[in-house]
Length: 54
Image (tube, rainbow, N blue to C red; front, side, top):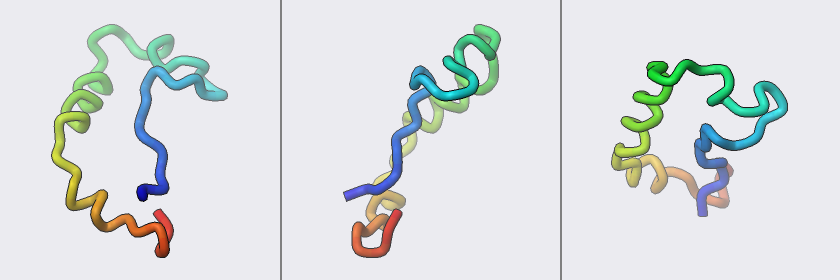
């Protein structure tokens, strides 16, 4: 079981309330988020053991 939170750019945060309010429409951060979302992270997830923390 993984013990870390998924990246959610639309998640309501304390500051800023919504990242989309701070970033321009074609900001590089959206591209990076899309690329990371397409990565195969199975090996990283396999290293997260609930008995060792996250």
